[in-house]
Image (cartoon, rainbow, N blue to C red; front, top):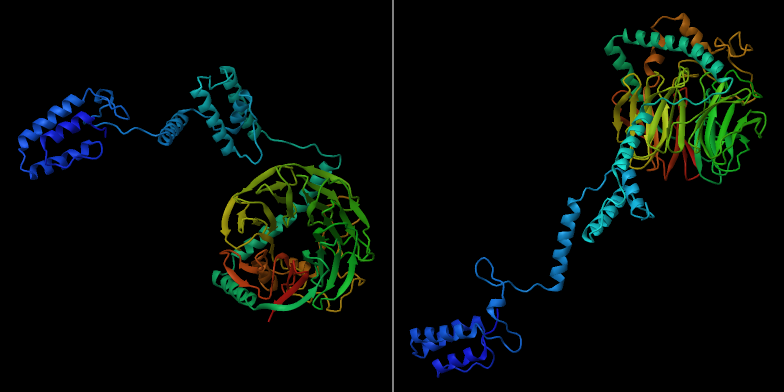
Length: 597
C-alpha cells in the first residue's frame, strides 16, 4: 500500500484534537483505527468522514518526497486493487516458466540421427561424454529455445532437401532391415552343409517317431512316471567338495560316460577329475589366461581312443586348444578369432566345432583339419554362447546385445530371433526334444523358447542375480544301462564302436552307436526305451551369482529343488548323462557334487 502525504495526516489531527498524534507516516491501513479513536472521543462520525475524504482527494496529486508516488502511476487490477511490485527473483522464475513454455512448443526431432544432424548444423558437438539420446535431445531443445529468443533461425541451414534426405535415410534403414545378408563361405562350406543336411534328417525322423510313440502312451502313465522322477530329483543333496585350483573356477563339464568332470580355472588350467571320487587324473595346459569354455567330443570316453581328439577348451586369450588324454599339451589349435573366445561346443556328429567370440562373430571349424569353415556375423555386440541342436541341423547363438539367434546350418539362414531379455544373454542350452531352447541372462531370468512357434513360451524368474549357466538333462550312457565301471580309466579301450563307413570323408552314415541305441532300434515303444524317452530333458538346472543352483521341472517350469551347501558366486553347472550327479563350479575355487540320497 502507498502512504498518504503529511498534509493528509495534519488534516486528520485537526479534526480530532483528542486523538493521539501519530509518530510516523499514516498508511491506508490506519484509517479504520483513527476513525475508531475519533468515534470514542465523541467526535461526529459524519464530519470525520468528510474531513478524511477531502484529505484523501487532495493527496491524490501529491507525491511523497521519499518513497511515495501518485495513484495515477499505479496499475489498477480488475478490482481496482493495485499490484504488488515483483522482485528480481520472482521475475526470473516467471521468465523461466515462459521459456520452458516456448520450448515445449518447439518441434524438436525425436530421431537421434536427426538430433545429431541439427546439432552439427548449429556448429555444436553432436554428443558429449556420457550423454544419451534423451539428454542429447534436451540439449538441442535448450539450444533451439535460446536461438528463438535471440531472433535467430532455429532451423539453421536445414532445407527441404535435408528433410527429404532424412526420409531417404529412414527408408534405407528399413530396406536394410528387410534385406537378407549372406556372408561369403569358403570352398568347403557347401560340402559341409550337404553333410549336415544328410546327417541330421535321419536323426530328426527318428526323434519325431519317438515323440509320436510317446504320445500314444496313456496320459496317466506318463504323468505318473514324470512325478516319480520329480520326487527323485528332490532328494538331491550335497555329496562331495574339492578345491579345484588356486584361482576361481569358471566352468565345468561332465564327460559323456559320466566318469570324468572337467573344470576350467582362471589360472588357465583345465583339470580332469574322477567321479565320484573327485580325484585329479590329468591337468591340461595351453591357455595363457582364463579358461572360458570346455566341451567334450560326443564320442569321448565312449568310442574315441585316448590319443584322439577328446576335449576342446577356449580362453580369454582368444585361443582354442584341442586335447587328447595322452598329453598335457594341446594336440592342435583353432586360429582365427581376434578377441576372447567365450564358449566352445561340438556338433553332435563330432566332426565340427563351434566357437563364440567377443569379436562379434561365431565360427564353425572342421575338427579333423582345424580349417575354418564359416565365420558368421549377426550380433551387434560380443557373442557369448553357442549351442547345437541334438539333430545337428540348427545352432543357437546369444550375446551381450541381449539378442539370441537360431541358425539353420543347412542353408545358413537366421530362422529365429530370441528377443525378450533386457540384459545380455550369458548362457543357452537345447532340450533333447529338439524344439525347446532355454536362455539365461544378466536380467536374472530364464526364458523358454519354442522353435516351432518361433516365440518365448515361458519366463522363469529364476534368481536374484545373473544366471551364469543353464543345462538340460539329456539321458545318455549309464541311464537304464550298465554304464562305465567305477574303476574306469583314461587309457581304457573304447566301449562302443562307430559305423562301418567311418573312414569315408563327409559320409553322413558314420554315426556313433551304443548298446542302448541298438536295443532301441529292436524294441517297440514300450520298455526301458520308452521311460528314457519320457524322462530325457525332463528337468533344467541353472546356476547363478546369487550363490544358488536350482532344479526346474520341464513343462510347467516349477522349482523342484534349490541345492544346499553353496556359497558365493556359482560360475557354472552341469548334469551327468546317467542322471546321478549335478556338478557346480564356484568362485570360491571349489567344485561340488550333488547326488540323490
